[in-house]
Length: 194
Image (cartoon, rainbow, N blue to C red):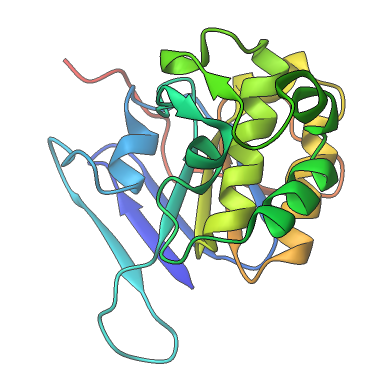
């Protein structure tokens, strides 16, 4: 899967095959534009399928604005999944991405979460979103880099997510990239939109 993101003042081009870290100063909302949730004021976002066709990629977002709805842990982990995994699979993947202590605290995947994950620590919320990405089988995962700074294991979990799934990961933010991640540059410096 390749992508071109033309934001008017900046172009991002990469063939997705690994974890890419875009660590330039970018306009606010670039992740939402890449996810096609918002239209850029200038330019366009185009995803090209190397096998032809025009099918849009399934995109998962790991950002401070990604919703965690009130309800069961199961619901939070499978939000956006085209097919719901079994409880056994959900528990297996949750443990794999570091949610074992949360599962223990809640008792099961039936345990209740507050709206916006208010009863979760920032690390638990991040790991929940990483686990959700693993369970929903996206083609692209967009990650807000600043969220990874508070959890020393998070960059390794993102690398694990990429390695175990047939997906691409784009980490966006001006924090230092994790060793082994490809650094993606922009053609020009980006400015805050007016």
